[in-house]
Image 1 (cartoon, rainbow, N blue to C red):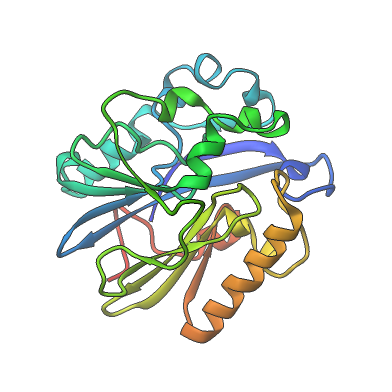
Image 2 (cartoon, rainbow, N blue to C red):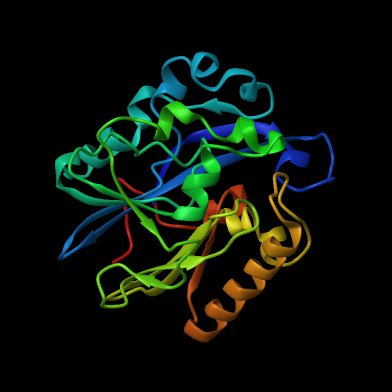
Length: 256
C-alpha cells in the first residue's frame, strides 16, 4: 500500500452535501507481486501534479488541491522497494479520474486493463464530470490497453487463480471497478477504491461527492458488503484518512 500525497479539499466534495469544512484525504495506490508478474493498481496522482499542478489539472485544483513530492510518483516508489518499472506486467485501472491515473504511461511493458464503459466515458464525460478526467494522462500514444467487456465485465480473474479479481462497481464513475485480492497469508483484501471513498460511504451514511449514478453507487456498496461478508475480507476504503492510517504501508511494511 503506497500513497501519492494528499488532496486538500472540502468535506462536501467527498461526502455529498455534508459541509464546507476542510478535509484532507490520502491518495493511495497498490503494488502486487505475483509469480506471473508484478501489478500496479491505479498509481495515484500523476507526477505532473507534483511538478506543476495547475498546468496539468487546471481549475480542478481549486476544489482538489494535490500536495505531493515529485519523489512520490508511483514509478519511483516502485524502485524504492526494488521493483523495476519495466518488470510491471499489468496496470489495473479502477477508473480514470485524475487521482487514479498516475501509472499510465510510466510502466513501458505493462498492459493497462480498464472497463470499456469507463474508457469510452473518459473521452466524452458529462459536463459535471469533465474536470475529473485529465485526458493527457490516458490519451497517450503507444499504450497497450485491454478493455473489459462490450459494455462491462464483472468478476474478471486476472490470472485464473483467484488471486486478483476485478469487481464491477459503477456509480462513482460509470465503469468503476474494485478489486478482491487474495494473499497467501493475509487472505482476502477488498480494495473498494472509490466505490466507497470512506467508511461513511461503506456504512450507507453518505453518497460520494462526485457521482455518476447515486442508485448504482448504493447498489455497488451493497454488492461489496456481500463479498466482504462472504469472504471475511479486510476492507480498504478509497480515501478515508482514518481508515488508511490503520494499514501497513510501503516501503517499510506490507501484507503477504
